[in-house]
Length: 306
Image (cartoon, rainbow, N blue to C red; front, side):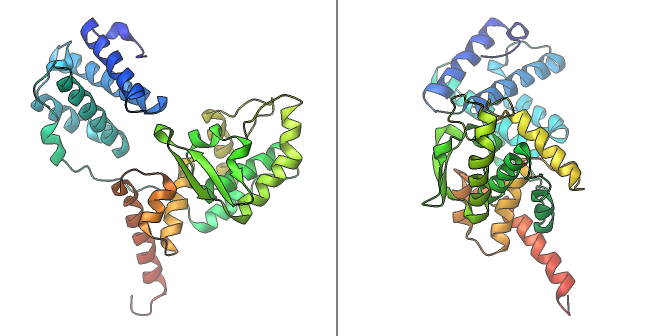
């Protein structure tokens, strides 16, 4: 499963392969997560070779692991650093279980608290501008409007979006069934606006995109095939540009906006956690900081004694 295996010695390569199998068979992690973990281990191996002239990272110590995070933290996003730490913890815990190691070199890293980078969140008026971009008189425009409305209404990830089937949306119950990370299902309400545009897409646009083919995938390309992650990124970037918004917004920004706007309007943090599909509420708590900053700016602007 690991790319560029010739860059690793046989012992490391075999261990990473077995580790990946455990992540899939026992832990039920998604292929995207497993691939990310593999990439993290490969990047660490390359760094180890460059800085310590060492091939085998199965026996590295706490000092080396700590040095790696200190040197690389500023070069990647906070999310990437946090995921790498998760990758290493899982990997070395597994090595201990397999009898390869007797200690965990990541143990001291448990006390490290990476500074959380607050997401750049679209404001509500920016969302309105973005949603109005697609030309709904056209086949792809109608599809794009339905996609944007659904992303904002549910906070789903791009991977979750492209995997959705036509039966994922229950118009009678007003909920969408989402298959998230680790193949965990969750039900999320999607509201009347998203429902309207999805129905319009299903009636007027999707049959023309399908072109007499058979497919249960909800959102299709103009060739009638399943949308890809790259395809969603491309259509989002086009809409962002046409709406005159900063280019650093991504499809994931819709997920950030979904969570932040819910909290701004009084939603409970636990409810937002469930809607986002976060297994740990600490992941959701970052949005309380974003919402808090927004409330502070509103207070500063409108309160007579601010």
